[in-house]
Length: 258
Ligand code: OAD
Ligand code: ZN
Image (cartoon, rainbow, N blue to C red; front, side, top):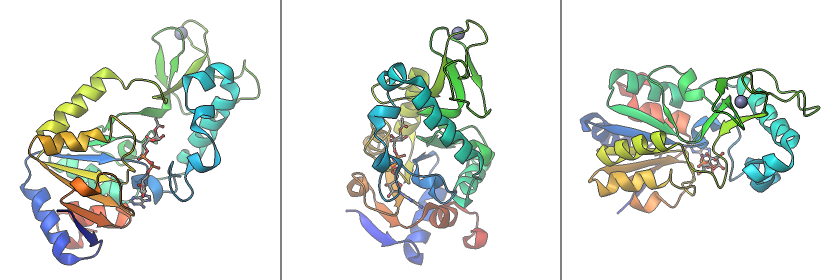
């Protein structure tokens, strides 16, 4: 049975810390909520991006085919917004934990690059990156942080190799995840003794299914979220509260390391 608990219940925090420390292999599956306290908007829930714009208009290959300037304008806005944001205590605690324990891996649905900015081993980015672009025609892809000028088709990023239009290197609705990234994530999730599910609404698959792979492999699921999610029922503990407050308490070397 899931034990839903207040973030600051010290007994639960201690029990989860002990689970984390005794697990040989840990994965952290993160979503937009882990970056909320850095100022990056989430997709769903209060203030979520999908409340004011439709994903079908901005985050599908069809939308890009119809109106690449509109899609690039939105991604340019998101890139500029995220460039103003810094990793928070949750990103830092996860980076520290994966530096200290190479068998602790971060698997993220986020495209904001804040896990990488916190240092430590590179996270597995399931949905791509806001700061990588790829050609719509040839295999060319590159890192890119420049401001997007969406005032005309010509000013949008174009391929240095073949001259075609570039697109964000992000997995859009209706598209498959990168096979290598997904199979590595599935392998890690199945082998994990502990899966920390942090700040995700757990409604987008296959990402949300990774926690179930851990469970099926005999591991334990712990959730950190300000709200309940469809994964709450399979979690041994569901800690309710902001990630930047809770995650450092679970992962810090000592309780005072928050
Ligand atoms: P969502 O926006 O769907 O969910 C964010 C989750 O974070 C919700 O469950 C919130 O309750 C929780 N949350 C909000 N603030 C929090 C905080 N401070 N601490 C902890 N939890 C908090 O984001 P994702 O689950 O990441 O896909 O969304 C999954 C995918 O759907 C995204 O990767 C994106 C989106 O469409 C693509 O862009 C391909
Ligand atoms: Zn090209």
